[in-house]
Image 1 (spheres, helix red, strand yellow):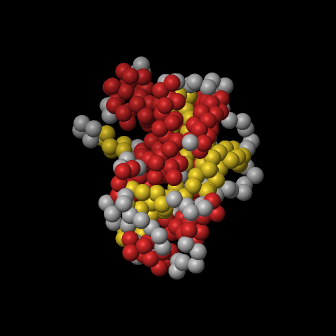
Image 2 (tube, rainbow, N blue to C red):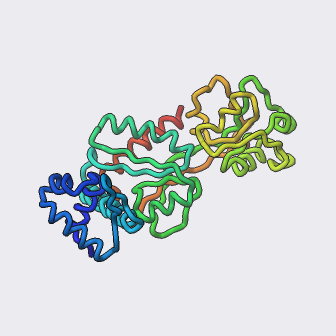
Image 3 (tube, helix red, strand yellow):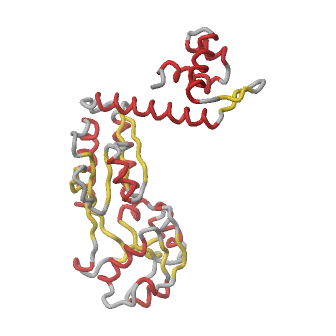
Length: 297
């Protein structure tokens, strides 16, 4: 086990790049700073290349710096968890797919404005990464569209998200051939979403694999940019469409009936072994109310 004081000295030396300034910052003698680094180098090997006016980290030094940062992050998580009864202070860590993240992040920022003591940490990620991040407690909350089956997870229904057929403004879609002539704008989940929605809108169609692809992007916020320019159509979740800036340039083709709609369930994930922090509970209540109001309008 490395002594915490040695690690603090190492981190300070990396920051200052100078033994004298490190000693002043930590209220130590320069000899004590050197001794701490010597202890570490005895255990781990050479940490610095000493240049005339700077210190350069060796591979061992970079590895130790990563280790020290991981310890600091773990310490912060412990502090946050032990302070979990405070609903207006601390970190709210949420990991989600792109479309729902576009909808939730502005809402969470509004919550942070109301309670500046809260710190919002949001990450966009695919389903597998969301599940892993919650299981590894790197994020307290996660949202996915495919319900996982893992006893370590608490899984509850959060909201519903319809898929939408989006075309350029002014374009009418009456048959499958109209889509063929327009062309498809793909994205990481595009073929799956299109297959599920278009099989209901156009029963007996030739299949999405037969549609000419006019482009693709993996950036959820940019999927509808080529659609807005008249370059093709796409199938996206409603939250992704609502977040697009130029609503006048696109058109959502309405479903002819309820049977022609596809509505995905959004599942909320957290670790099953311990209760959510008070701040996470507050954030969830805020988000549920906001999403519920949106679904009713």
